[in-house]
Length: 305
Image (cartoon, rainbow, N blue to C red; front, side):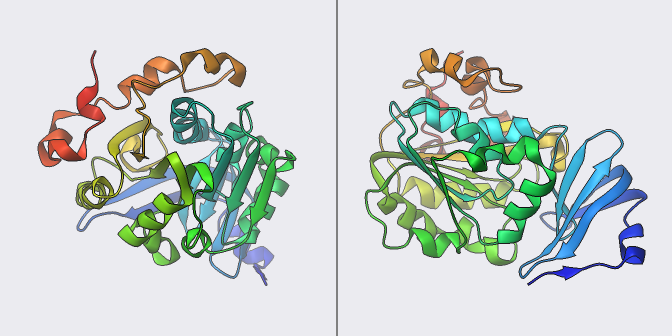
């Protein structure tokens, strides 16, 4: 069930817009966007969804007033959340994406020839539908026959699954509302059980500048669950601080020691990812390493430049 906006309400978003995002108190950021037109705006069962056509950043997907992605820089996020774990695992055949209804992560996953089956678990069907309708550069992977979509709560979806996936990617929104559970310890224990004995989880893990408390808390419990843990990041201008990070959680494989560089060529032309970026993305600034004990950064401490 969706709620459409009137023409007058749609016109309200066709202007010079400022997006405000509240971060760890008392910090917030604003982002100015010149919008040419509102392509679609409506309220789904779970959230307000809007697709805007902008002057410089291409189309943008907005959920509850927060920028989820822009065509201008989405590749820097999706290529890094996918190719780092899939090129670390020697033979990823079955992959699960939790969240990611825009399709960007799916698009990157299906580039891997080893992958035989991809499950997407997205709570809001409307996000998938609007991406298929208006964001073809992201949603192309949905039409790959290896992909199956489940419209369910991601935390509930992994409960009870055992030894099923080679890689799980948590392509979530910020820890607000229904997404809060995706940043909690029980969810990571369930994912650990859902992985095969040599499986890998990579999850969206916020900004090193604005979310240090969250990152430290998450890595503390993740390091008690997984055999190898670490943190890496990508540069995405439309996200707060221009950076977004990822928790790397592995039962066996090391993203620096087990990286298979020979498989990169099968992925075709990429815009952000390369093997040098893969390795150096685990190289963290001193201010982050100071607040995170060595045992939480087992992978990062193995980096040799």
